[in-house]
Length: 391
Image (cartoon, rainbow, N blue to C red; front, side):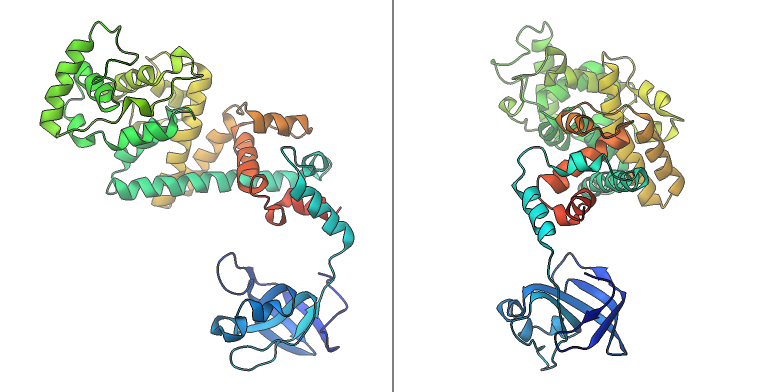
């Protein structure tokens, strides 16, 4: 709304000192705004509607949560409004410019390629960099929330959380959910007692995945399948195990090197060598040292980068948040800026629009842009959408 020459619908001058805090939950749209109305300074909440009568349609006149509203902003003032205490609320009528409405409708009607992307290339570099930085942080914080949920599941055992988080990353998208489901049914403390026996751990990992109790799977040609099945039967009796269904795993459109049974064998090797460890990741001085954690198994450099990106970096950031360590969080952000950018359809759209992408920090920001804002058509909260509408 305009910053000057604002008046209420009954002619009183209005000066906005502070818009307050935007509320994304239930209640008034803005909290603790500081507004001068007709020379009197008010501190309270602000509610926004298309029409004044929306106040009554939403039941605010009977809701005490709206009694502290000091200003009602509407596009069309079609009546007075009062709070549940009977107080009349001042109203300001603001007309949305036609070009803003037109631009917003264009954004909402866009299919796969938002028109704001082309315009974004002409934004001031500092503005674009600021928005990309915010998106990167948003993406990391979303992953931290997932890790905190796993921490609760694991009774605050950070090493167990690292195991589940890394297992999920080993799904490389197509099998990520299934890998996490698998990791949650591994008897983590019990498995640790057999960490020096690769064949036993391999039997445990493949057996819990459902690959040892069915004839129709990708292990039929294994010479050791009978021995692994025998070991798994022993483990089932010892730990009262129930395997998941082998049909949960996806093999279609997956290269042989990325078959889940291959990835599980790699995890077994890393686990027995003590490489699947948060403490080892914390001790790594840089991304090269962290990448060496995955040495000894046949993983392409790109796959290692994705494991660092989707497991190690978020765990560093989450653990730094938990410990209140800014140094650890900064280390995670530094590693993110040093890892190569991902190559996916979102990053390709970004590059085609002439926008910069220098590292994984940028590609993670782009992923957040498309999944959090573009797919939800949440253009009003998106900096690119905002700049497009005001152009």
